[in-house]
Structures are given as structure tokens and as C-alpha cells.
Image (cartoon, rainbow, N blue to C red; front, side):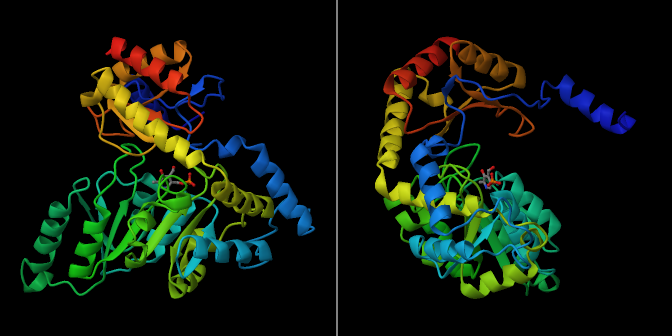
Length: 383
Ligand SMILES: Cc1ncc(COP(=O)(O)O)c(C=O)c1O
């Protein structure tokens, strides 16, 4: 039994061909997972994590409590110091997931009277965090710095009454999860300096992918010191679980005191922390990132060869999207590719705006050139 209103919502979603259902994993060629480097399946990381646990004589199954009570094992502290050094930050604070990090950060940092400007395509976890905050929020057009400055100017200099005295937070992603594209981060940094914005960048899909040893896009551009906070996540290229906020020591102290998704939850178990350590070890040892980059280059070249590049969003990242408008149509083409053995997911509205439905290809270091060639050849015949 479900209240009538809820049944109606489900029926409406079904009528729009947008009903979400859970499916079990399949053994198709992987063009869908976030496991960009194959780390989630790596037995070397698995063994390494086990070794870290045995070396530390750790046989814990769970963390036993919030990190503020009984859950803060020394492996956490060690890993956070490592992450801070690796990512050239003053401090790192581990959260249970990227979702938790974003809702914890955005619900606690911006205060009443402050403003938050966010890219219109920002991830749901950031939107949810913003909704929980008492600050006013405004969206700007995707990757559009001009729109951001125009909106900021309009809101702050309209008249005396609207003169703004609060802090201004600006948030974007270094790789957009549903488009795969990136903003001009250097320009975001410059603008933030000009106006005194606090800039926050979610690096979920850049961690392990961009920069030397997968340090992320901000570090690749050498502007990591110029942002107020970075969110990195371990569930994508790192193949494990969890996330961290990188920033100043005082920001870390603030979050420990006020971020409710950090305080009121059981910490990650130590084996999750050991796996993060092991995954970073692997990142420095292997050349999976290079293989991924080569596959991205090859995929983009093949899009041109098959004359379907114009359908796709320009992206240098592991996320490559071909716009196919309409839930029904995109679903049908995805099913066609799946029948031929390729796991390519349709991304439908309302996850993306109406008319911007798409096929989302996630590329991996372990995809072969033949697989890329074959799937794009098929796509070209379908469209
Ligand atoms: C940009 C972005 N931020 C945050 C998250 C959430 O990360 P997690 O899966 O660790 O909760 C995701 C992934 O869903 C994401 O794409």
C-alpha cells in the first residue's frame, strides 16, 4: 500500500518513460561504470588493503560509531595526512561518500545572508546541500562566466537596499558528471579573486584521471591553492568508496564541528580506509591513467571518423555523451547497443533537461580499441 499521491507520481513517471528500476550487474562490455581505471576489480588493491589491515593488526568489521565518538581509528588520520600531501592541501577530511561530503559542506558552510552561485548542471548532491542551507542561491548558465558575473553584478548593485554584505560562494565541477565537459577553471579562479568569491570545485570525475598521478584537474592547472575547497571522491576512478574535502585546517575544524553528515553517522569501516590507501598506491605504480587517456583520444577520433562527433558534447574526460532527444528514442538506441553486447546507459529526463537526453559512454583504461571501434560503428548505423 502506498499513499495515492505517491502512486500517482510513480504512474506519471512511468507514462513519461522515465521510471527508474534496479537492475543487476551484467557481463556486457563496460561503457557504463565509473571504474575508469579498473581499480574496483583490482586484486592487487584488494590484497594490498588486506596487508595494510594485517600490518596494523586490524580485524574490525565496522567503525563502531561516529568519528567524533568511537569511530576515528588512527588509519583515518594517517590517510587524511597522506591525502592532504598528495593533493597539495593544508588538510583533508574524509566523509562517507561524495554525497555526504557535498550535503555536509553546503548545508553548513554558507550562512544566512550569504549567496551561493552554482552552475545550472551541478550535481544533485550539491543542489541538495544548497537546499539545506540558509543562504540564498542562484544558478548561472553552464560554464558561463559572463552569466555568473552579470548575475552577481545585478544582484549586488541594483540599489542601496540590495547592497550585499554577506559572503559569496561559487561552486562548479572540474568534470561535469552528465556532460563530461570542464569549465575554464583558471578563469573561475581569476573571477573569484576579482570579486572575492569563495570558490568550491567538485573533482569527483577528475580525481585519478587528470594531472600527474591522477591528482586532479586543479592541480594539473596549478591553481589548487587558489580555491577555497575541493571535493574529491573515491568511488569513481579510485574504485573504492568515500570522499574528502580538501581545504585549510580551519575549514576542516569547522566541518568537524558543523557538518551534520560528518557528525551524525557511523564512520567508514577501516577496511574502506585501507582500500583508499591501497588505491592511491596503485595509482602511483601503474600506467592505467595513460591508457585511459589514450582511449579517450581514440574514442574522439572515431567519433570524427564515423561522422557522429556533431551529436556529442565536446569533452576530454572519460565521460563522452551523445545527445539523442527523447526518453523513448535514447532508451531504444541504448537497448540496441546492449543487445549487441555493449553496456551503454541512456540518461533520461528528468536526470538531464528535457530534449537533452543522451547516451553516456564512460571510457576505461581496460576498454580495447576494437570495442570502441565496434560500439561507435554500431551507433553510427543506429543514428
Ligand atoms: C560530481 C559528483 N559529485 C559527487 C558525487 C557523489 O559521490 P559519491 O558517489 O561518492 O556519493 C557524484 C557521483 O555520483 C558526482 O558525479
